[in-house]
Every structure is written in structure tokens, then in C-alpha cells.
Amino acid sequence: MEIIKSTLSLTEKLNILADAAKYDVACTSSGSDRRGKKGFLGNSCAAGICHSFSADGRCISLLKILFSNDCIYDCKYCQSRCSNETPRATFLPEEICSLVMEFYKRNYIEGLFLSSAVCKNPVYTMEQICHTVYLLRTRFRFNGYIHVKAIPHAPAELIERTGYYADRMSINLELPTSEGLRALAPAKTRESILSPMRQIQDRISEHRMLTGKDPRLERSSANRYLSGTIFDTAPSRKLLSETPAKTSAFLPDSVRADRSFVPAGQSTQMIIGATEETDFQILSVTQALYQQFDLKRVFFSAYIPLNDEPGLPPPGTAVPLLREHRLYQADWLLRYYGFRADELLSTERPNFNPHIDPKCEWALRHLEQFPIEVHTADYASLLRVPGIGNKSALRIVKSRKSGSLTFESLKKMGVVLKRAQYFITCKGKTLYPIRLEENYLTRQLTAEQEGYTRRIGQSAHENWRQLSLFDDMGLK
Image (cartoon, rainbow, N blue to C red; front, side, top):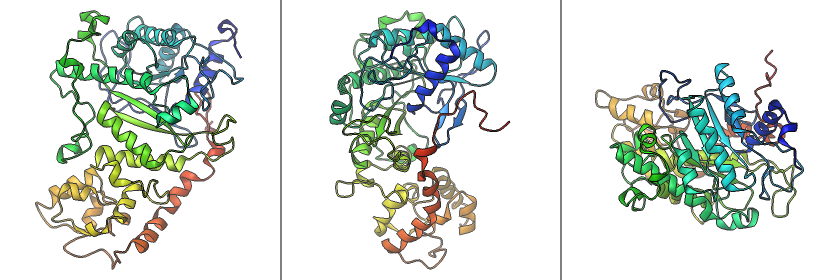
């Protein structure tokens, strides 16, 4: 259903396109650190942009909108697909700039997340997104955080131009496998998604090398203490910067010298639950994306059944939020704890136990490695203990040099003893008498996490909704 732009007010467009943006979860804190500048409005600090939380627990960064929901494609899982009878709207670049500036001045937002359906064609859509961020940076002198989506099939020139004005770019993988993409989004191909993803990665690496930095973007501070992480074992690939740059003429030297290219890195999103991939397949794809494209984040979006289509969960099916949550926990283990996908899951055990977190599940399947003695275990071994994180592991390693540790002191360091107590000893002793047996420990850990998992999973599909700028959530 087509609605002419002039028939809609700016508020009506905002209502339609902010609501349509709620299905895209690939945004988070900025990861970019740019202080205020004289003559400009706003800043982008590493602490991140403003966040709110919707009723289903999703983190929402404002202002989060689509440029347009008037899509030419007919992806089966998408609310904005062309065959759906839904109100359509498209912003003008100046309208988005006006919204960002006015909301920023009122302290509603600290940045912009701008995505879009493919309106008219990929070239036109990418042109409009590029022009929008160009106006924000130049005419409106907005210095805050901007995250934009790259459009599949868009020209490389437009993607590069946009990258010099954005803090982060992302292009959605959509579905974990090529088979799923062919079945549900036949207008999109894996190559049309991976090609701009590769271009963005190459240009980020090139710019970082030119400024004397490590060309690899995604490294956690904790990983410097680990060897053999998924990043260290990533397959080597010749960087674009090692060959004559074919796209560096797209912008004047003065612009490239004055601006970083996508300084906060790139991310992507996968829809979970629309197709029948296992957690092992999803996590393996995630690991490959980190290794081969040096992504900052991979986001998982639990599929919300919207369209009545063969091969898709019917409307009313529970949204797999708990599964999404377990995948996020596993993603954290990949990036910060030195785990690999084939350690956490296998073809024989392809899915996570929804009742316990992935780190506990791994420990239960490797009880031969436990318990470990906190006074002698190395940093990498401590990281594998459920209830011990990066900071608490570092504190243990440093503190034991100057004195002995107790369970009470471990608790003060941030160790979650409710989980860690089953897998550690302190001076050769456990906190309580414990049977190191999988079924027994599974019962103990399941009981400890039961209330937590219930809160995530219970009837979430019935009460989720997008947080609105105009909704006081009953706080008046």
C-alpha cells in the first residue's frame, strides 16, 4: 500500500518508521570515543549512546528509525515486505536531520541508528542514507554517534562515502545459512551481503594501518592474556591496503585525512528461529564472521512470527527469547573467554540446554578438568570456571601474589560462588562437601538459574513492545 510522502506529517512518519525499526536489534553502545569540538554539537564517548529497554528486555538506542519502510523486496519474514498491507512512509534527509538535532537538544538522544528498507532500488536508498549523514556532519555539524546500515547491491562508492561520516556501519546477514536466505529472501544473496562487509573491513584495516594502529579491530583487553583465541587462529588474508586502493579516489584526500573510516567497527544481525539451523550452526557462522570479517559484534534477533507463511513459525508462536539469550552468552564466551564454537557444541549435541548458561554446560561436560585450585591455576583456566569473569580472574591472579585467598575474599573480588563453588578449591578445600557428578551438579545449577530463565522466557511474546519517545510508561 503506497502513501504519498506529502500526505504524512513528520510526526506520522516518525511513528511509522520508529515502530518499523524495532525489528532491527543490531545496535548497541557506540564503541567510539570522540570528544566535543568547538563549533559542533554533540560528542560520541566510549561509554555509549543513550539506551532504553523495551518490555521484552531488548536494549534500544534512540533515535532508532528507518529511512523508509517502502520496500521493493518480498522477504517472507519481514514486516515491511512489499506484499504486506501496512502504512508506508519515507523520510527526507532534512527531516531526519531536524529530528536528530531537536531530540538531541532536548536530551532525548545522544546519537542516531539509521536503517532502511530498500526503497525504489539499492542505489537510491544508499544515496539517501549517505546524503543524510553527510548533512548531519557538515551542514548541521552534528558530532555525535551515528550508526547506519549498508544496503546490499549498493555501489562501493556510496558505501565508502557513508563510512567516512558514520561511526559504525552494519549489514545484516539476515539468516545464518545460504539455504535459509534462498528460501525466505530470494532477492538477496550471500555474495551481495558479504561483498560490502568485506569492503568495510578492508577500508577499516587500511585506515588503521595508515594511522599506525593494529589493523585488527576486535580485540578485548582480556584477550591479551590468552593464546589460541578465535582471533589469534583466524585465517590470514591479504588486506586491501597491501594492494593499490581501488576505491580511495571516491573522496577528496582532505576528507579522508580529517575523518576516520567507521571508527567503531562494523556489526551484523542474524534472525534466530525463522529457519531450522541448530545453535551449533549459528555459533559456527558467528565464529567465522569474527575471524574472517573482524566484526565488532554479531547480534541475534529472535524471530517474531508476523507473517502467515509456509515454512515459518505461525503467528502466535512463542518468541525464542531464551534461546537468543543463550546465544548471546555463548557469543561472549567466543569473544572474551577464549572458547571456540566446537568446544561449546558439536554435531552430537547441537543445541544449548535452555535451563543453564553455556559456560556451566561446558563445565559439566568436562568435569575431568575440575576442581581447580585458585592459588595455582593460570588465568586461562580460571576463565573457564563458571562464575569467574575476566575482572575477577585478573584479581585472583594479582591478589594471590601477596597473600592467600579465602572463599570470602573471592566473593569480594566478584566471583559468583553460587556457580563457582562446584568447580574450585581454595587451599585444597571446597566451600561445601560436593559430589563432582554431572547429574547432581546439573540439578544444583538448574535450581539456581530456574527463576532467572523463567523471567526471560515466560510469555515474553505476549507483552513485548517497542519503547516510544511519546510513551511515559505510566511514570506520570
